[in-house]
Image (tube, rainbow, N blue to C red; front, side, top):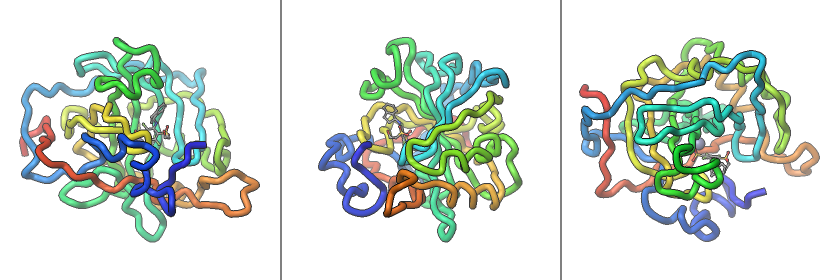
Length: 263
Ligand SMILES: NS(=O)(=O)c1c(F)c(F)c(S(=O)(=O)CCO)c(N[C@H]2CCc3ccccc32)c1F
Ligand SMILES: [Zn+2]
């Protein structure tokens, strides 16, 4: 029941009034353009561990009113960072059927169709996501840019359940699958910077890894994402479609984005 939205009186321009960090430093998302990128040869490939979750396990898919989120197993983690980061949840950001440009991060000022975020917390230092969420070294989010192309059977393992989570607070169970199949194949090529949660409370606690290579889903899959879900409860007299749930790119002065790739 958080009191913020992406549109209207509680929209992103008003977030800082209730959530001061949203008007603070190190805010995300940002635009990746040439004169802020710096090659860093020390950046290691991201190494997912425990991502291949057996069919016998289940993920909880929830409509939380802002996005559709899938709980992840704490047995899932990523290596290659200073600490071990354990997976907590994944969720998506997208546009609408008339403007299919709903990614949060942009490249050369261009939006992708959508963006997947896999949220991890520093499990070397903190017991859970809530404790880690407001700590400077608390979170690591993997961002996967999504473009229109061929049908993606891995994303379909999530998308095929949208009819069961149409409305706020609805949940359903998804059999385990290899979450690594949601990632592009090049885990060694990415943008890296210190930023924030892109939703309130906007804590500046996120080490962002945005993969250079986008993944593809079909036009039909993207349309399902853009038209299936509502921000409101089933009985709400004023239903609100869950569309355009992306924050605009933030000012990025005197900050550098490290890249793990040359040209
Ligand atoms: N784009 S993003 O990766 O920054 C990001 C979101 F975009 C987003 F929507 C959520 S949420 O939990 O689904 C809803 C708002 O908290 C979270 N969840 C985070 C926000 C802070 C927090 C605290 C406890 C549990 C989850 C989260 C999030 F980290
Ligand atoms: Zn997100």
